Structures are given as C-alpha cells and as structure tokens.
Image 1 (cartoon, rainbow, N blue to C red):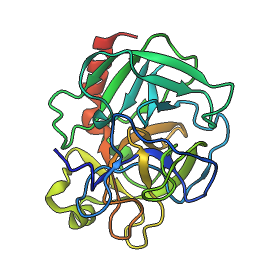
Image 2 (cartoon, one colour; image 1 turned 30 degrees about the horizontal axis):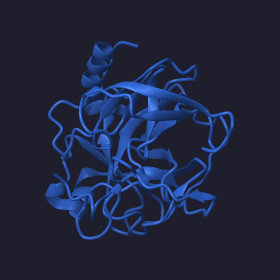
Image 3 (cartoon, rainbow, N blue to C red; image 1 turned 135 degrees about the vertical axis):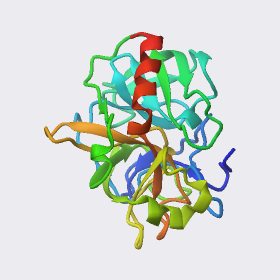
Image 4 (tube, helix red, strand yellow; image 1 turned 90 degrees about the vertical axis):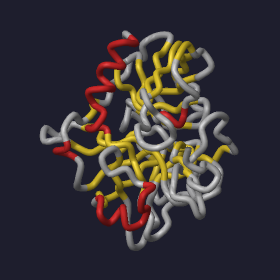
Amino acid sequence: MRNFLKVLRRSVAVGAVALAALSLQPAGAQARPAQDDPRPTPGVIGGVPAAQGEFPWMVRLSMGCGGALYTKQIVLTAAHCVGGSGANTSITVTAGVVDLQSSQAVKVKSTRVLQAPGYNGVGKDWALIKLAQPIDLPTLKIADTTAYNDGTFTVAGWGATREGGAQSRVLLKADVPYVDDEACGGAYGSSLTPAEEICAGFLEEGGVDTCQGDSGGPMFRKDNAGAWIQVGIVSWGQGCARPGYPGVYTEVSTFASAIKSAAASLGG
C-alpha cells in the first residue's frame, strides 16, 4: 500500500489563493503524500474561486475528499477515500454550492459504497457512493475512450491551498496541462502505473496542482461538442505543486466500462 504519510492524496481544494480556509482534516482518507515517497496528496494550489453553478456536479465528501455526480444518485470518487465496499451510511455529501458554509448547500447521506474491485492501494483508484436520494443537479459524463486524454485539463476542489495547509471553504479551480507517460515516469519511476493513471501539471515550474483534500475530485476538459467530460480522478503526487512532480490521476477511460457496470449494480 502506498505511503500516505509521505505521498499526499489529492482530496481537498485547489488554489494558491488564500481564501477563507477551514481547519478540516480528512477523517478517513489521506490526502496525497508530501515528501519523499511519490503517492497520494490533495488540494488545489495556484487556483482561483469557481463561480456558483460553474461546476454543478462537484460534491464534497465528509471524510475530506471530493467527487462528482456520475448520476443524480451516485458519486464517483477515489478508492482511497473509502474503506471498502458495502452498506455505508456514514458519509455526508455536500452539493450545490461553492461555499461549504452556504445555507443553500444540499446535504445527502450515503447508503452504499462500491470500491474498485481489486484495489490494493496501487492503481484502480476509483469508487462509487450511492446516495439515500437523488440530487437534482447536472451530472458529469466520463470519458470512455482515450480521445480526450491530452491537452489542458481543469481541476477543482476544496482542498489545501498549499502543501500542509488548511483546506478551503470555497471551491477553487485551476488548469493543468497533460504530462506524457514518459515524462511522468521519469518523475515517479515504478510507482506510476501508466496503463491506469494519467498525469498533469507544470512539470518544470510546478506551482499549480491539486493537494490534500482534493482526492476523488474530477479532472475534466471540454469534449468535441463543448461539454465537460471527466478524464481523471484526483489520486496522488509527490507533495503538492512541486517542480518536477506532476499530479497523478486515475485514468477514467481505462475503467469506464467497469464504472458503468458497478453503477448499474448499485441502481440509481
């Protein structure tokens, strides 16, 4: 299993902007690690505030992760954010707002969790959470081919705005460029699973990245029709926004068929 104390899982926010931050600590999942070991870390660094309604499918999970509405009653997140599969009513999903303290926030409890079959801390970092009731908000479609696995992506979250910092009260967003497998492998070596992971970030200069608290959130871009499509899930990285170490994301297209089947098994 990857060393969560050193490699941060990206399950918190986006942004280098010091907006009102909450002293939230992930209760279950760890954020991407920071220091010597290249693995999970969360939070968006170098970002700016998202507008209300800009990314309506974004959700915040009570254990300190992000996610996206795959259907109105199912959230797609990271496997490392959940403890396994089965009945689970302990997760609260917050949706419909960019400010987590807004009185307009929609809050729904979980009923079941389905962690990626075969997940063991390396690769396969996806999971589904079924909600007690549907949330009447738009959903985010996922890529089922590699056609959109390049270019410039957008990341968003309520994670830490600096490595080791507090998580954000406000949803932050940032754009990050694709980093090819060869360059990413040069940074992470055998820790990277190229067939299951996709990398993004400013390789040489760093400065923009997801961080602690962003784990499970989507990495997305526009498709050929101009609609948002999810290509990645915030997973891990060496620290946050460090030069030479891009963010590592679950490659959604690799698991699109498995995600669809898992969602069907959950219903909703």
